[in-house]
Image 1 (spheres, rainbow, N blue to C red):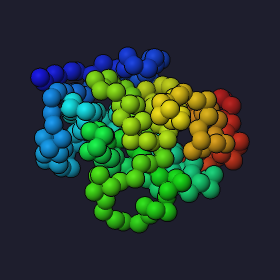
Image 2 (cartoon, rainbow, N blue to C red):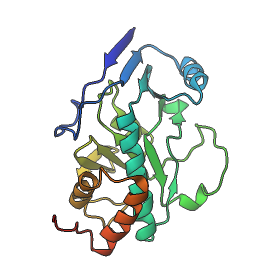
Image 3 (cartoon, rainbow, N blue to C red):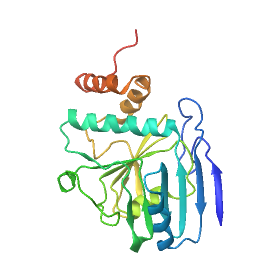
Image 4 (cartoon, rainbow, N blue to C red):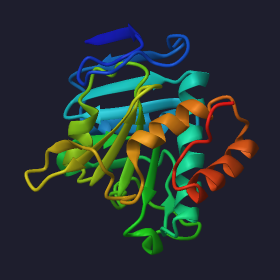
Length: 233
């Protein structure tokens, strides 16, 4: 069975506030059920470098096309996370949207962004990993401006990713994996323990019109100011 869904602007699984800017356009989710693992591999590997995200969850496969707005927010958070790690002296290695999959779990996912922190030195440098051999990242980022028909948090939990950030264009939520392998929403990130998350959401909104080159300087000033935004003129 195949289903094509034109993506709305928020997900039903986790309550969200209205996203900043116009609703997402150009994003579609195409789902197939009753897909075995070999067929998933053929589809995922056949897509190659095209801009389609492939997710697999115990027999169901979803193909997602992403919009410019989706990719803009993904890159924006990536710039902020790497710059914050540098400013706060946190060892970090970005993994981008590297595919992570495990046949024995019958699950596979491509995060918007992922990062190795505790295991950063283990993956440093240019190298090749088979998707089955990629170690679980310490942090995954999900841009949540459109709805997935699959339980992406459940996939991350099965893959034992300790922390997931979900951003809907307005609100950032942080989930931490508990000993029962379920995610709990947290008010603080274990990956960035000194970072006040409510101020990060404010910073994301306040700097959305900055160019990437301007953003990096703004991050440096924001950290130096103790995560306080400058007063409005």
